[in-house]
Length: 391
Ligand SMILES: Cc1cc2nc3c(=O)[nH]c(=O)nc-3n(C[C@H](O)[C@H](O)[C@H](O)COP(=O)(O)O)c2cc1C
View (cartoon, rainbow, N blue to C red):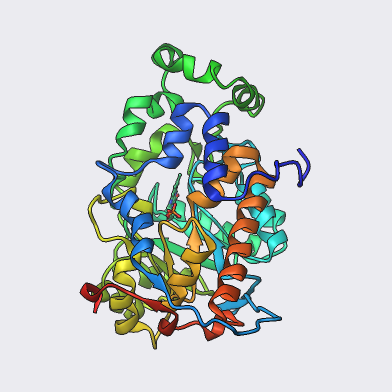
């Protein structure tokens, strides 16, 4: 599919979501779309943006609109970074390589999850932009040391340490749809779920050509080789990251370390004390502990606590360029987007990711012009109003 082959009617992230739903079997779509338990945080992450109202300045000419920004020392064409999304290769066989290429072409950063189907060296080579490597300690410190060393040699520019996954959250849709069986069960245990695959023949053919579910190329167990996908859940449960690990990581990784999963001022201060160059205010897109606050709601508290000491990024619920602008007005330097681009990947591979990025970028530009603001760097809280209960 060529880059421009998506129909012009695809104008929003929700359009890409619908396309992904049509192309992917239910088990894969729900893995991407779903959240933990009752999915309250998942929904709130998106809804909370409606509580913030814009305060535009009319009759202001904005002939040039500058949406570029800088995160740590990296120049971005607009303030959104692609978040780590595990098992991307199930959404499309191009997976992490396709998403990284789209990010590089668009002038932004791609973050590769530890739970990746493509070798990290291939992913790094696919993007001409910066790339970050997201670390889980699955398999233990020795396994992590090996992949950190590979990431360093391959030229990854920062290490993102996810702190909110002491165990995987309960994604009820995954259990009902047979995600475990897809990842590694016997042929017999897959049988009840087979009709989902036949209902999506294009995806199924591509999945078979890709060799089914390849093992995790970046988690290499000594003496055994790459970890099979099925083992990840159990491995995560014995892979909790602690602040103590930040000291050890500091010695291994010479570049910036970013703490992902901060949801309170206290943890933000701890991250700064432990040398985090930036933090990501994140609840894992509502996939871990359900009923934690939506990220936009805790952003002001965290900005007040550590805004002067570290760069603050936010993810969760970003579906429009206007959401990005609101997060920046509340003090984020930039955002990470997860599902927004993963829907594009599931819908159409690399062109779908490119379209997602374009939709968000155009949305930021248009919102700035409608606000009467000529640059990202001039955004502040005077462009929005928040509910009284936030003050
Ligand atoms: C399908 C899926 C897989 C994810 N895998 C990872 C992962 O491997 N590591 C990680 O730190 N976060 C992971 N996340 C969380 C994202 O990095 C990000 O925090 C979240 O998607 C942001 O919310 P949003 O999807 O509403 O943009 C995943 C999210 C999704 C949707």
